[in-house]
Image (cartoon, rainbow, N blue to C red; front, side, top):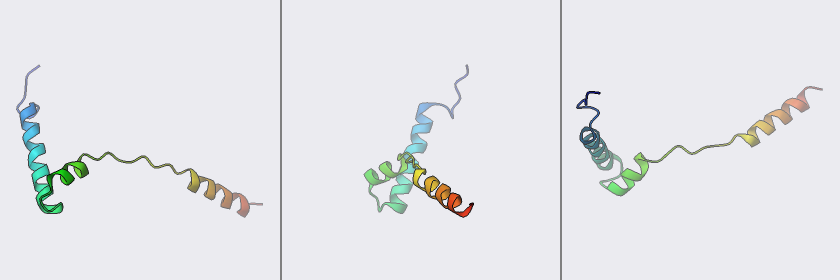
Length: 64
């Protein structure tokens, strides 16, 4: 397997660092810690149990 310049760890590391720097400067007023936390945040899993129950209830009441 040939090692490409894009797939090397240092290239990806540089891109990640530049992205964090730009985000911190533009959106977090230079606070690198807040920028890292917001950029690396994973999506929260949401459950839709209540809305499914409510929709079923309304549909059940509407159809006799």
